[in-house]
Length: 307
Ligand code: GLU
Image (cartoon, rainbow, N blue to C red):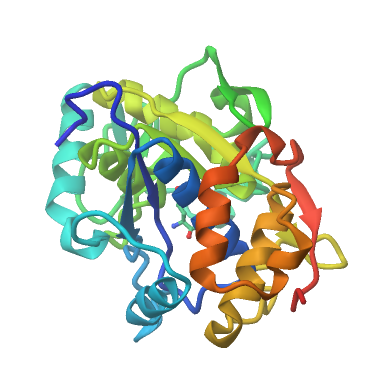
């Protein structure tokens, strides 16, 4: 259901159930929620569980319980990506028919041996060996052709970003050889299908955004606004994540952690609210929410156990 009313604000939080929520997740949930609610908008929840190898049993229900314990409320049912594979396949077929997609049987080592350019996210820019090979069979990866033109957008927090997809990313995979759909495809299809008007998420996804905008253009979708929040990093500058052993959010300390998240987001919560209840904090946060106070930085150092 694409947004029929162009003024309707619809935001979302889209966790991957690869483990428990941590302080970094709380920052993204809090900012996207406050931005949606303070603008009279809706806030939707989506479980991004297409990467079956990384999925952790019980994590999705644990995430929902944690969000409830922190006082988040969402609109409508929770969308689950693993239940939407036919929709992603249909989007791939459209791209194939438009001549935007091609099969690729290059191995990682072949790519590493022949690639010349480093990609924005640390891998290699695909050198294009299979571009004209005409492989459309099953059992090979499916890549999207990218534009040679630079793609730019203005992020509401991080400012202007320009990326040359052809030299900084390369034709990228939408479905892997083992049949798994890529995050880039699922996120774009679902943001459009849910009628998301405004995306607020961590700056670790900033470099993915031009790919997502390119896909939106290829599929004829409109582009939402983007606001990429600073990510919380550990003392050695790594993003706090499951991989860097970020501790799970402690539901018993929900008000204190919410206060910390508001502080991280530059909202300057009053010191006397440090001992406030969750509902007092939420009502203060809603009436004082000022997105322009969010630090315009891609990363900020934060303690593992803020207190
Ligand atoms: N599922 C992604 C994550 O947990 C977030 C995707 C997004 O917000 O676009 O990092």
